[in-house]
Image (cartoon, rainbow, N blue to C red; front, top):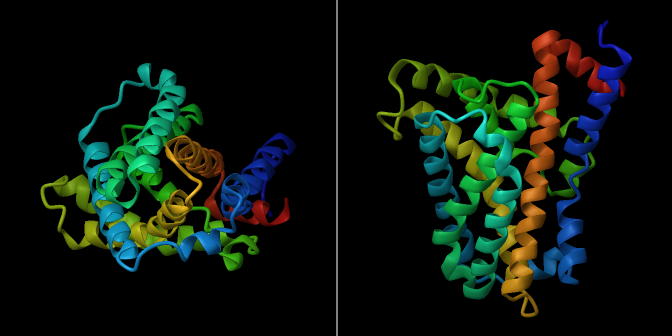
Length: 260
């Protein structure tokens, strides 16, 4: 039986609401006025391959940046609004230039999202300069599935945690011993592959939304705000849970999660 107190259960309930009800597809549909499924049909056949490749490069660069950067714990507190503004600008560029902008826009927007995720981790009391927390930040890119199967599950968060657990553990062990000398190391590639499988799905929906004829630079910027907000909420829920796991066991927090 878990030992979480009433205030902690309230926090956990908020985290669960954030993680299990992303409603990202609905928000996009409401914004562009077209069902996301219809928007997906507007994408050319080459789009999925291009997006997957760009997502892989973006996450590899984000991983490299994260592991090689010592973050100033004071300055990061001022970055959230700036990151959102810059993400909005890159969204405007993507909306104006379409599919051709993906290889340029995605690494930039991914890095900005990662910085915002790190800020949220810091606000929840995590040391953002540890390998564990840095990998936990990257883990957020795989959270918040958009399929009906994902959205209807009260345990989708824990399912994804379980899917990534082995890869994160192996990557952490490898990086702690050898750093990122080889990004092609199996431990790194396996983790990135798992992250890309989820992240590329979300990015495909973003690109599809921008492909709608009525969506230009201004609307493209708005879509990027929606995606930034999505990952910020995933990060908030994720790091509330990780904070509680420091005080209690993962099993206790998971048990309480199922009850709130």
